[in-house]
Length: 425
Length: 158
Image (cartoon, rainbow over all chains, first blue to last red; front, side, top):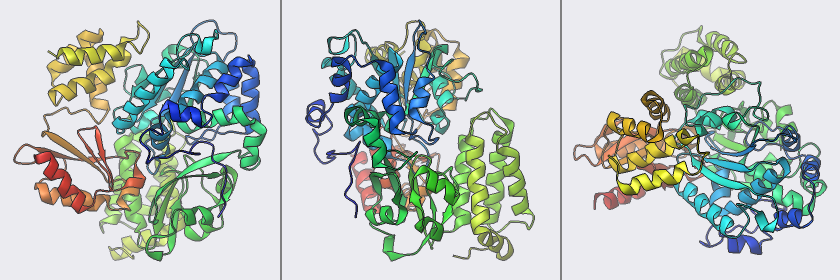
């Protein structure tokens, strides 16, 4: 078993009730990166250069290069600029940001302060998922600790750099994980995604230049500044720098969060999670959150866990939520539940998604309940075609991709359900 | 309309946003009002609209869009169980069925004693702790076996 460097969860001890506090964080080299930047008056563009070197990619799901995103923020802009953290973690299977915030909240605050310094943002919001109230309260306490210690607020550590950070509590809408829906939500509206362009870097929160990153992305930044982008890159592999927290759920013995170097073999990760529950066989795995295509167990066992390897295998790393399904799983039923989720969570703005997700759900529901028709599988394909790529945001794609992948890899099961009006497992 | 304590909480939220963007506090204002009143009656939403200087319709839009707001009265305790796929693989449906049987209700129904309303929830971002359920939007309960559920219900009934 690889004993590897951890960037975010190193020395984090969930069983110690004081471990998350500022005092403990400072003992773990906390805020050293922010202090270093301010003491040495490092130019903001050098900070962005360092993040570019690290090959850090967005950990929320899209995998966009972070340094590049930061460089899109207009440097000379005179007015307010905003920094937003997307902690609206609602992609089924994903539960890493909750652990970062409740067990190591200051690493996120430090990462955001460094990002604000690099991009010249004066104000930041951390949008916390609605269902995790206790975590939101902890973030509120941690922000207050940081402010009192001079790591947030006006003239941070005596410099002329000021950054105010606030937590915004969501209230139950998956769509707000989409960055422009999240901005609408902070503005006090329904969370309906905006057309892009304009992109948030030019027209974001309150119409001002805004950069939005995921919790885990920001939390990776202090380490990169302390040790250098090059060193971070070397923890992973080329184009897939650093470590990643994988949230493992489903049929394993030890579900949980595991921070490992990108590129670790899936088989090794599975072993870390205690292996398959009851020693059963791996039937399928969704490697990056419920919106990503499912892969058959044998393909998965030969795959490494990084952006490029998972893409090559036919899926996506997404948010790093690894959903494990053993051979007792009925794939029709699994897909029915996921399709219900997208139907329930579609914001209703675009017709192909609003109507299409309902169609998908109703058809899969009737197949599951023994009322499927022979033409249904073609109809599902056709529907997926007519949703994918035809909506403002990616929720439509997220509803269509699992359907396509399930039909591609487990078609026999769907056919069996339709022909025999019952399940084969 | 709302207690001084609730208004103070709402004011703290308003202070997080630019002075001309009071509307940004609408989500927390509704949540705070719901904590006090149990649910969001039209009068409550109208009050918040006035308080934040928003059209009432804009407040209704928010209250009906986000699914943790109660638009109808609920029992003293709202129990929301996640049945999404990752939870379902680890007993989410068993927990939901057990609750239905223990409380004698289906989803979106309230027990005869008015204590419990059962809701089916979507992903709460705690899939590793499945089965999970949420009490009154605030308290997350993890690894909810039948024994754990019995214990929780007993505590809440006290």
